[in-house]
Amino acid sequence: MYRDRFGLKCKPFGNTPDPLFFYFSADHRQGLVTLSQGIHDRCGLMLLLGEVGTGKTNICYHLHNHEGYPSAYLNYPFLTEGEFLESVNKELGIPVGDGSRRRNRTELQDYLLRQQNKGKPVVVIVDEAHRLGIPILDEILILSNLQVADGHLLQIILAGQPLILDTLKQPRLQSLNQRIGLRYHLDRMDRANTIDYVCHRLAKAGCTNQSLFSPGALDTIWKKSHGTPRLINQLSERALNEAYRRGKKGVGRRQVRRVADAPLYQPLFAARPKHWSMRTAFAGTVMALFVGVSFGLWYFGLGSKYLPIMTGKLNKVTAERRTLIKKPIVVPQLAENREYEPGDGVVVEQEGTLPVVAYGEAPLQPDSQATELDPMAKPLSVADDLPDFDLGAIAWDENSDRSIAVLNDRIVHEGDFIGDVRVLQIKPNHVVLLRGNEHIIKKIHVEEREYTPETSDVSTIAEKEQAGVRDPEYNDQAEQTFSFAHYKPIIYFDYRTSNIATEAYEELDRLATIAALSPDYEIVIRGYTDNVGSTKYNKSLSKTRTQIVRNYLVGKGIDPEKIKTIGMGEKNPLLPNTTPEGRAVNRRVEIELVPVGDS
Image (spheres, rainbow, N blue to C red):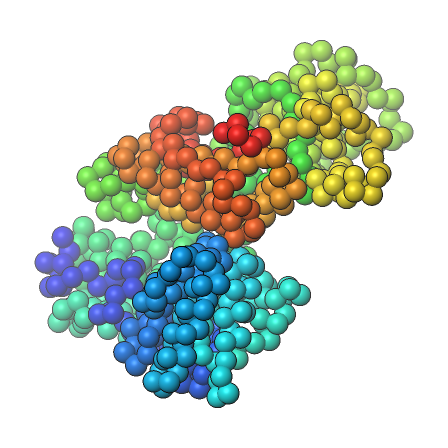
């Protein structure tokens, strides 16, 4: 272990907040002073902003551990209004009583008045505030109304990423936005603070060798991490391991570069534009995942505002032009990147590419040779001209780049080839193909569908029903056969985490809207994992992931009694766990709407 070689008493670069290692740059100190002054002045509602890993939680911990006032610290945003209020009271040591919101609010107000008489402010710190649902923010607005003549009874600090500013722009939250009396944004650290930060943590870990990290290593750490404390920790920790593994007496520039440029970590430490945004980068990553995963149509167009049009079954998958498949490499010291328990064998993953051509199809044609659908071309032939082609399913989106079809059990996009046949267009109920100079329409079999709204979403249908207007194709028979059998969203999770990806919230919001319009249906959430780690651990992790999704939906107004969660663990893998892409697909939560009582 590198601690003995380098004379360290403990690991200096852990990623969990530890008061022993707290380091405050000039910006952190100013933020702490500003928020402390806001508490003293009874400001009421305060906002602490910062990108991922900039040290918001450290400031929250410091404020929470202050002995001059009682405080509550909440870092789990997916709660109902009642659960949120109950958590605040429990953190402050207030009896919860019968659990009703009115009773808990009354108990809290009485407690605040008692503390006011003692001259003590009461502080509630909400971390990860950018993930709070509208109902919780409404509850926070109510709590911020508890005032006396000389100020607010409750001091509330919302700490989160700048994403929360977009949420606060909503007209419904205008009053809450206007009540925020103090705002502070944490920036990344400059070069000098980054070097001081590394040296501070080394000293706290017992290091007496002031040259353990060379000046070149410290400079490279700053350049690669861009002054983000969390990335500084990761890069420094890996560099120490690298130096130890290679028998070095200290960490030099080469060890830092080798770690930062490794394929496994390169996305973390890639060069960023001057106005680089974590939000933009994360959205791009999720979009790459959307394009890359070739299994199951990404469950019919994540983010589409229309219900998917699906028929048939998927028997096998051929992926083309995708970038998600990965090749396994063994890196023993990087075990935290997998779902595992101590002692398990660890396989981490390295990005690669899938082959352009699979199953012997013709190679993709250059754009210059692409043939577009010409209205003056030969009249379109009927689908029977290609009897050997089976159109199994369509997931149509108004954005043609997201439209997907299944032809001969293969997933295709517009522009793809199957042999010498090119997919020109994907429409709601047919595809247009090109073979030579001949255009062919291949229609989907309407009689196989259970529900085909085509260009009407659920809310539009409901509005028309209330107005007494019915679509010509939306007849009584279609109403009787309405089914959610093909609407089964999948939420994917990263290694060993239960965090919902930002891009998945759009689909969950859509699900909440559909569920709210369907009172006779309930939601069943099943969680799955890969097979890395013990069966018991994976079972627990899968259950935790379902609870995370459940709590978000409850926060959107769904009755918790109508949501059932099941942790399936390693069962029912979508792809074999023998490959990295298979494990990535298997780490998921599947959601299904079923008639009440059928679950």
